[in-house]
Image 1 (cartoon, one colour):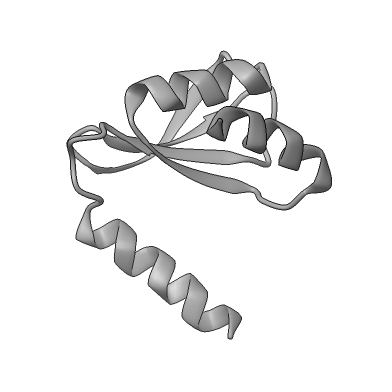
Image 2 (tube, one colour):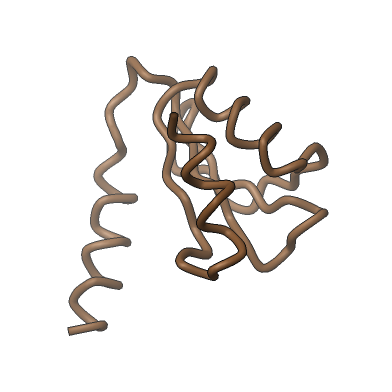
Length: 86
């Protein structure tokens, strides 16, 4: 289960940002991490947001409904980050 994987990886600092498709999956991940208070830090498009948990402000979750496509602006943002890391 994805939420279990995220919970196990968090203490290893393997990630600081998780992209999640689907409201149920997002709810399971947030619950497994104990993150209940969230601040919207960016709106990428209808239904697609980046959230910062109050309980772990160094982390971010970007989520979208399962039926929505990832916005082009979000894909470009992460492509720029990938290119800079190379």
